[in-house]
Image (cartoon, rainbow, N blue to C red; front, side, top):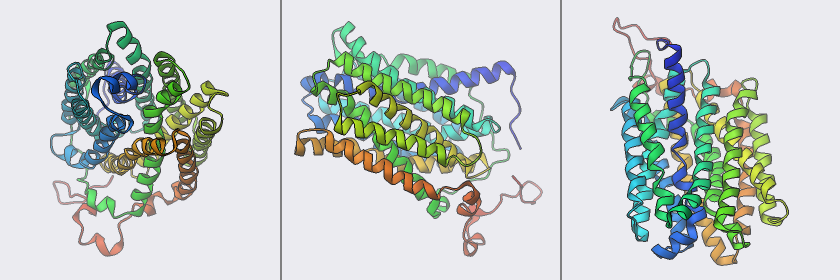
Length: 418
């Protein structure tokens, strides 16, 4: 049963809410890189310590994404989003008062927790409310998410310079979070159980396809987490200023946003693998340029990386949602993909910091992500839409004994048909 169609104004406000929520999910991470030197000087964090400000939120995004199906059936998707946005407001505000490394890591954990819950439940909301336009609305959500990254990278050093300290460059992010909180509380639809099936995360995890999607999502977004953590410091080592290196990161994130918005609109057909391979080629070219010719065309390298990472993120989310027709089940699959994926994503910034300490440069890290892009291109060969239904089927021996894989009876005891 599809949700009742809201009014035109209601749909527009819901789309604005989708965009504004997405806008708040990355600035607290991308704002760190341009201010890393100032944060380290005051808090005593070295490169590996600074990497924790990315690693800890990403780990939490992975761990708590697994709670998505339970949150949906417990306090509901809408309630989860509203509470999580309040956590984002609080975490950003507390950065005004962080004076040492552990306090900064604590705020990063708080912010990561809020983002983790939103990312776990929001794709299910999109599929439920926009069943015929999942690709376009997920593109909008992904573009806003990446655009928020651009905003954080560009605004953080400028606000820090204007205010005279880096605390303001990070704490200002509480303002758009407040706006998103108000809009979500007013316009996100109430949760409805009509037409939904209770989804078992354990049952989904027994399907090899879920693990394949996790690996692809994690390896690609590991490139993103490394770029937002170390692109600006990399160019600061080449003599760039905080504002200039932050501007380059902002351009990268802006290209992410544009690709995340446009590619889902122009990608035709159910088979998105050619478009995914295109985004992986762009990533490989960008990482190769950073590794071997960083000063030759930094702007072009950043734009290639941004377009590749942003487009791949949006298309990966659509691929996950396309695997299952039921919104609750598709949302649960997306949450699990993000859960395992972000556990992988959390590690590369720290690994790159270790490689930097061992080699004295970031080149080994860029080469590592070049190899990851090539590996994901091979793994995506298996994600053929003609095999979605078969890939998500429970094994015949389990159907009779696993209630999570059985249709839920309606009030007359007749199985519901989606």
